[in-house]
Amino acid sequence: NGTAQVNEKGHLQIGGVDTLDLVSQFGTPLYVYDVALIRERARGFKETFDKLGVKAQVAYASKAFSTIAMVQLVEEEGLSLDVVSAGELYTALAADFPVERIHFHGNNKSREELEMALEKGIGCIVVDNSYELQLLERICGEKKQKANILLRVTPGIEAHTHDYILTGQEDSKFGFDLQNGQAEAALQNALNSQAFEVLGIHCHIGSQIFETTGFILAAQKIFEKLNEWKQRLSFEPAVLNLGGGFGIRYTNEDEPIAASQYVEDIITEVKNLAQHYNMKMPEIWIEPGRSLVGDAGTTLYKIGSRKEVPEVRKYLAVDGGMSDNIRPALYQAKYEAVLAGRPLEKANEVVSIAGKCCESGDMLIWDLPLPESDDNDVLAVFCTGAYGYSMANNYNRLPRPPVVFVENGEAQLVVRRETLDDLIRLDLSIQTKIKN
Ligand code: LLP
Image (cartoon, rainbow, N blue to C red; front, top):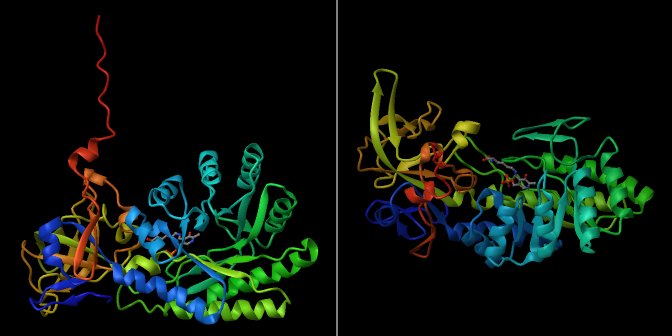
């Protein structure tokens, strides 16, 4: 995958750097990102839009992995950026990301967050609900500012990775319901208000999706409504944002299609729909998170204790776990892994990889075939680039691992390892009561 290879020493090498050297230099656990692969993924999306001659913005959904260095990389590749909180926005601003290419998401943006977005002049706010629409209108009034907005709609399609459920009444905390008049009412209010420039419509149907069917269904549902709104409200969107959710291969069980295929299928459908309803082709925005960074990330752990439950299972514990990758515990997510020092050696046992958190559910991989290992070995878990570091936590007061970017044989630290002092940095001692 990407620039991951086996070098002349027989070690796993990423971006031209020996992973065991990374471990000597930066310790474990360690997140390693293959920068060339992120660039390749970013260019893949952009080039497909260019090839199809469609005006587009590819906005990286920074919730997948938000750090200053990552945002800088996104800027180098000319993508836009989706943020969902003051924290992600602050990270983007700290990285000097061009504000006009920042899109602000979220189903409960606070007044402070909306004010921050307006003050910084960010490109677009994706309005999620009528509470937010009213709040934003008030704030725009106070600041005598106009906001560029998209309205997020729930098209009544739920993507359950492989199959799609069409529901009349979508039960989701996100967005204006497209079918029951909610979206139309919101659009009407927004169009009537001085506060807004309504750029268009947004929808996001789910994550880790392996087919284009759901996107196509969503586009069809939206265009049916757009056709009505064109007549009733004289509204035609300049922008149609179809969200993210493009799936990646975590294990051999996953069969995603190429990113370019998602884009081509979506564009073909939208072009047909625009033509069918005699509307102008909107600019297409997408918001990939996982598919830009997921397979570019690898986590390196040191193997520690081993426990055998005779005739049942061998547990191998590593020096991280659900604190740096909560996805197996949260979603039963599956991963593949190798010994970084001898990735090609034949497996001769089946082990289950346990984390070090005090929780039975802290298991990273069940039933992994591996060569017999000892406590000098380093385990490399693949495809941890999305929602790994970003969902990391300090359960059991484990310090979060550092992040290293590798490219062209060079490694650079982009997030330093949390220290024990970092862990208590926000703590305050209790005030001793004065006895009299
Ligand atoms: N746009 C919106 C509005 C979203 O809500 C999301 C993800 C994305 C884009 C990016 O989706 P992606 O391309 O990364 O699938 N923590 C979960 C995933 C949660 C996704 C939330 N929204 C996981 O680890 O699988």
